[in-house]
Picture 1 (cartoon, rainbow, N blue to C red):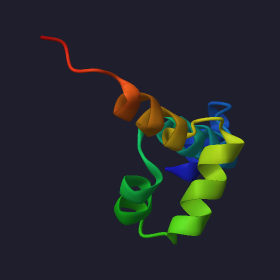
Picture 2: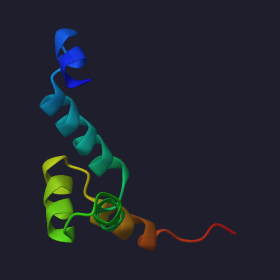
Picture 3: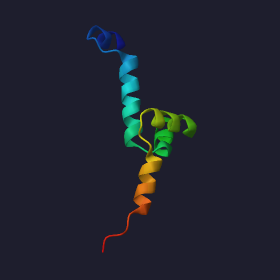
Length: 68
């Protein structure tokens, strides 16, 4: 399968990296780490590199007031 994809011009390493960085912007580091079976510190580093910092998001949500 890898050979067929390369013949089509799809670079596997680049496609994998792109997919991982996309996941880091969509999932909290803890979920990403558990899902991929990686250490949480690595997931946090990936997330920071992809500018998907869920810590800021969580802080913003905690500051919101509940609508009546």
